[in-house]
Length: 356
Image (cartoon, rainbow, N blue to C red; front, side, top):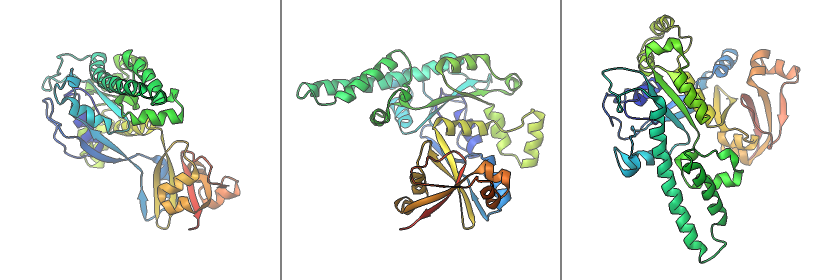
């Protein structure tokens, strides 16, 4: 989670984690990153548990990191400078918190509310920092090329393409590269190659008039998703008992906590899917990248399962819930036997057969 100081990152982080991390209305309250491991909301897991009634239900998780606020000229060392940028390089995706609340006791670092300007300030610092890294690598490769023309030719070509994106003020779309190229691009450890989405932190008055045109325009211009949340309200709600929370949500016409959308979108921009296992008394959700083979998914559970993989019984969780049991799903031909190269789909329930 990144953004300008006083954009509400730590408030939203508190709502996500229900941890009481420091959260005060002055810049750089967060110096070292706060880390929280958050269960991913999953109605399918709940539905499956209601049918199977296991003793233990373990959801899958996603890790959120609350990183200190960034200001203009951070790449030159302003604010927390390169320390801030180095923290972002360690994550897999970026949730950019953009302020759209107007509270007098929490001053805006640039006086007025302007989501487009604020987002541009943060992302420009990232682009400049990455551009410096790219330029340095290009100079190094060009020096090596004087010794041997075979040195770094592929890397040189990729860096030139990345530099072109950065110079025109754009993050890098890694989908334009093949898998081998993507692996090399990841080795550069550039921030602008990471997937990114916006969290618009709104006030209570704005809740009734969503979506915000200025945020929608920004998201559309950048080709990104935007999630809306009233961070302070949801932080307060997350601390209440369930019955009291439900009463307040009804008052604000909230069907669900928006914090769940933040988690789900974070999960989706990482291109992750969920599969399920039922082993003994435990039912568990697992996270894997999309397009993972069945054998690799088995390895997520235990390395021995991947090494000794034979076959897997597979049924989708929606089919299972609709049928009400494995036996009923099998009678309708919805339970399949798949091999090691089967690409696991989101929501598959896997029973791995293996031998070591």
